[in-house]
Length: 398
Image (tube, rainbow, N blue to C red; front, top):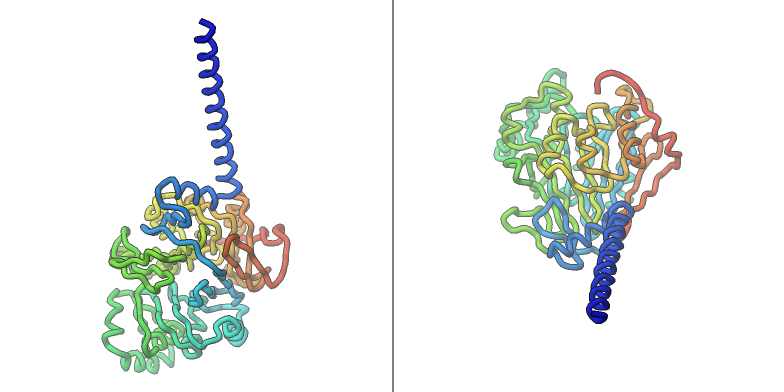
């Protein structure tokens, strides 16, 4: 009987020890989840069978290999507009938009670009949509650099209403018909700045033109990795970085028009850039129209780190549903000092404040450089307090 009692006591002690160990593991995982989410994701990916040395992506079917070197994203201060330069760790580069309506300077922008793009060539150029504050400088960029790949909306340029319209239309009529015929959506844009970009893009020699259109909500037509623009039928299984764009679908283009400023903005693709367990969300002028579609397409939850804020911090962008989906720690706003749109709106900044997001702004911080390697870090042209960056503007509309 004594031997049986000792055995029961030993078993009881073993059970208590196992429970204690499991509690310690559970507490450690909770701490990791909140304090080091990228490490938590890596551990979770390992136990899902994705293997050590890889990263579960959440946006692609293949895990990413761990990369060496820095990935940099430059949010260039162009006043009230957008200009983003991405320097990938393998030496490739990409420019997303380059325009302004107030406070920008073309020469300063081109000088800044030339500091980091020194070989006279850009691998990728994307225009998210046709507004002036995103395309104003693009024709000069195309004139300055050899562009390998251009991504643009399925919107044809049909200039009208100005004395120079006929000149631009004559140049469009002289373009390669096969390239012009790619743009088959009935919606058009009539502005001269879009015409200048459209002509420059379709005139660029030895350049691949891609439309920012997904076949359906289950497909991503534009995915960029170390191996270049991906063929969906032959994905890069050894990639260290991946930039996946969620573009408007063909059905969206068929069923919607560009009859309002908000609808023009809503064709902006939302990109997710992944590298070494970090995710950066790039939005163009996305808003309450296309943000819910993105949320649905990623399954309602995508743990990210940095948000380039949609539409310069407008009230109709960065909705609660969208922010709850991507759960970022940092928000970067490209906006111009004293702009007439009252961007960024205080209501939008309050949504970031409520989520304890650190805010950077080009109107206050100037040029903002994000570096991603084993960690993420920011370098800004001008230091200001969070209290300053949390102060927004008020107004009606977006």
